[in-house]
Length: 329
Ligand code: ADP
Image (cartoon, rainbow, N blue to C red; front, side):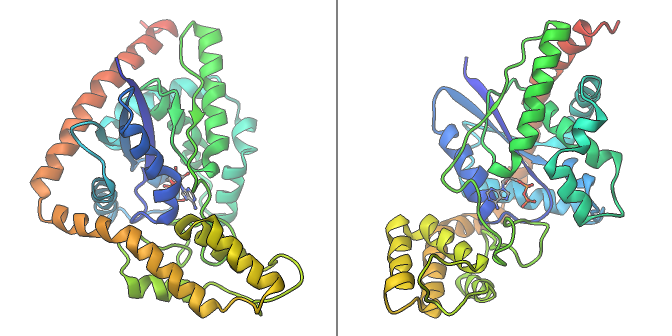
């Protein structure tokens, strides 16, 4: 039996380089491993934990589905899951998990505090429960590995705590899931401050951006004089060099660092042009495939339905076991 691996992306917009390098690349690596079966999820219920537009949610969900398929999700090998298609099972499981985790634990999570800062007028119960719904997503399929970016580590810690408590209190046998890390586990924001995120406008490069758009977006990254005795201190420059390492290799980054510290200095115009071209080269096949998929809505719809059906079978078995062990009739 293949082991199931779950990973999800919120339906909050088109995928960007951070999602691709931090999560999707890991999912594709595991999809290629015959020991595993990957579950690529679009977590649309999680998108409701921060302010969202009800008229756009289903379209945004569909966009992520297309992005997954364009990046290489192979429906012959992997499942595609729109979370709300099994929302009844996942939210019910999350409720049972909420009985073993304290409010204090959830309030102290750095991810919660960050969202409170971003949306001070929308600190809802749904937001507080975000990590428990994620624990349900993962444990419903007994996923031992989770290919996600480093920003998700606190949530995985909650998932492990849930698993430990459910196992010791109720005799269940959930695994304690570990993060499956990729080289791009943290892609910085184009502003230099914080991570690249769908919910921070201007921070990202989308997988569907063309060369001109990539250039325009990179143009906004702040730089400095290009030369100094020590390592670059400007967060924009650090972010640019990190991206150079990811798309053009560590050697190229070291070359720039040398120019910065003991050479003629970095010419950022050229750096950004080369970087844009390297990014574009990696993205071009993705958006070409995406254009093809846009013409096949029935095919895509079928993949969504098939994935939901298969996932429902597995998650309902887990839920039945949890209910029984927790003493429900
Ligand atoms: P976003 O913050 O852009 O809305 P999500 O919360 O939907 O993204 O996260 C989806 C996946 O992408 C998660 O696995 C997350 O860890 C990963 N991810 C998001 N942003 C980045 C980033 N800047 N660098 C690396 N991985 C990221």
